[in-house]
Length: 477
Image 1 (cartoon, rainbow, N blue to C red):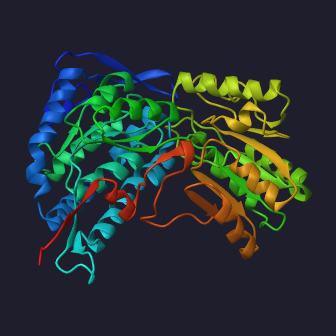
Image 2 (tube, helix red, strand yellow; image 1 turned 180 degrees about the vertical axis):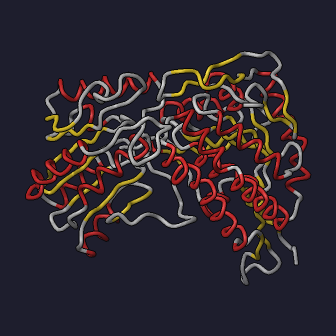
């Protein structure tokens, strides 16, 4: 890749101040697929300074011009969709068809949703007839640090860059060092779209390095982070001294409640949803709670679905799941599968080790445990791999209590044909999102969680407001 050892700062590709290389590993082959440079304090400072210089001009740009800039960015993004798909497949192991159909398209999906929201927003308005002349303004918060994960690279970059751009903020993006190639392609797209210098900047680095430097930087007004709950805590503490706004989208341990009257495809749909992206989604329904009279049948269906889930090298076309992203993730998942066995869960599909037809790469066997109890590690800990836990329940109240019995609160799922029950249960689930009967969310829907799944919302008008300050002016009219 032409710019793999460069950063994008102030509208130019620049070499790092003190070059330090990091290999990017293709998880399907365990071989080096690219080498990038990692930034240090001087690079972080240069990117923040460029964003600071550009802020006043970009903040003063009319909303219509900012919308036009995102429209250009969307057009340039669509032109590079195949390059983006290839980069994501190489860096994090998403099968190429999944990259094309899900990973890449998540970016333009969000761009379109943000454009629609921006066109409809009241960027300024009167307070109301009770306060003549008083006016409310929405203004950009300032320079923002955007720290994104490896599992859905373009989904998360789009969810942060687009609303920050529309809000009038300037930004420094630090993609995951595990999946940096898609971020570099994205910077090339930004360059092609002709954004003003300094509005968008990119510095590659790891969490303890560039990530921490951005979190404590005095000239950064906000940090928007997606990743682990552990890292979210560290960022919050680091940002506290400068009273930065911090927006966090963190982990999850979603419950999928399958009632007796759920449709016939509910279990198989839940397995596919859990295993999608090789189980590497924070909103995956990894705990399947099944009403007891359907429990044993559900276990059989889930075991069969897991056994029939193809596991394929990421560069191979066709349906299936690919490897997990890294050796570290592979080892963590293997250890948790073994813990599930050791703690007495009933293994009905998969298990430790690679699938038999693959002798290299970070491939995990699609795994299903039955008879999982709330005291077990696999019930409580986010595994982030293709591992499903199944637990029976008897009553609606018990299902609600079990679903809420977690430190997380990102997404829960309900499967029932009884609309009254659906509404009752959805109201009581402590999560930012509740997906029902396989019906996904629409463009511009707010994404985010409660409890230790984070704070703030991404997507649509809610996502734009994350990057805005509210100003009140009296006697305006």
